[in-house]
Image (cartoon, rainbow, N blue to C red):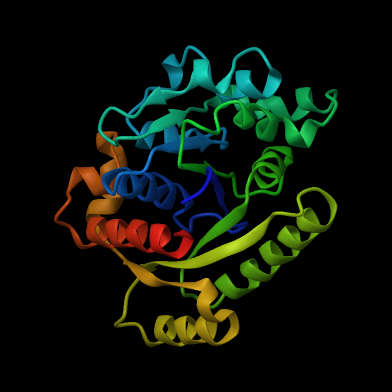
Length: 256
């Protein structure tokens, strides 16, 4: 595989498991021998705490990197159990929106910062907030592609069309490299007929952009963040953890 792959994990609908996807894909990729950096772009800092870091005690964070007072190399930290590096976030990041307005190339701040460490990582996974904000825009401008976690529910398809339009606009105006890498079906329950139907619709409409791996609804994945680690390392034998390791394998194969 050539060069660093920088992917946003994004969906404009909240509560679809973006952070769960980000930290577990990171841990899965680390297990299959990839060097991974997670960038937490959400002021809630869930990817930071879910990776085992105390967001209140970060010496420097993605906020400092965006404003230019720290480099990625200075601000990243290892996830204690995850096997990957984290560029953490906390509430400070909420203020970055306003402060960045003054800057030149304000939507390219993250891209420029990541350029300095591109030889250090095989994958950079950016956990974006659900809203389309200047933070999300920084993620989309830095990325080569977008991984879209989605539940197979009726309203999921509506949210997806909004995201596809956003990606098209960013592709046209700011980042010609940006594309949808794939759609990941998460929190999937095969016993629910509607989920099966939406899953089939997705495959009919998006074809091979739908990843083969399906992440099942899994209690252990939901419990893991309260223990400060990804589900993949918290309970490796759980169905959810095994699915994410399989997803990591699929990701590496697809990009081979």
